[in-house]
Image (tube, rainbow, N blue to C red; front, side, top):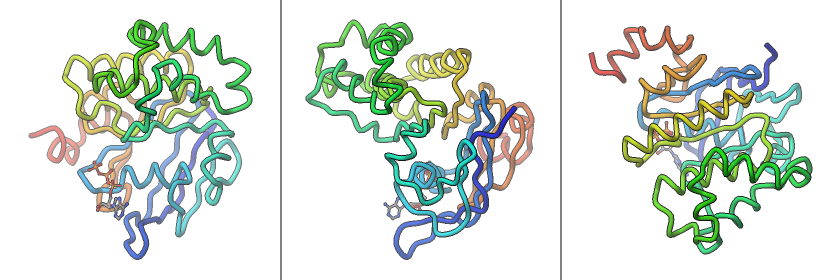
Length: 237
Ligand code: ATP
């Protein structure tokens, strides 16, 4: 396997407040890697730094053999690293279809737009049924699927998901995990932050636990499911 994303001793924060104090992790091509941790541990902040939304104050981020530590978001998306933010950031008054088409920004994505739209509709038939509906009138679960679909329209090599099941009913949580499993089975590399620790670690090849701005534990999904620290803190002893 070849390394796709490597985060080395990353530090970042907001103004004077330092949130990340040393994040170390890697994602290899073809893997699903999960980042878990308690509220406020710095998971979203890590993803924001990776996507160039906030600057790194120390450490390095390498993607596909290049240093992206100081790259801007547009450049990072162009290189194939596409993030679905926690807030989804859909255009509420635009239709489902229009939102999807707006995801095709990278040159390779523009060329393959129609084929990719078909693929997204295959993965999420509900989006095709509702392609003319305004995004803001879709349910929470449908909006999450739309946000994932829009990211796929960008023809990513690495799909980064920030809590894709947040706020969803159990049935929809299952649908989102099924979709991630299917996208991965087709060859997509996935890096995700999740609160549903048990399901996520069951799905992931490897995972990292984050506490107080640092990655403190890593292992295969299976190893982490059996780790005392994980059981005590996240799975309920
Ligand atoms: P959660 O699981 O609750 O989403 P998280 O691990 O993703 O948590 P972050 O969202 O990365 O945690 O937040 C880490 C810390 O950074 C928190 O203390 C949070 O209050 C702080 N923080 C997040 N965003 C900002 C911001 N825009 N300005 C200042 N502080 C922020």
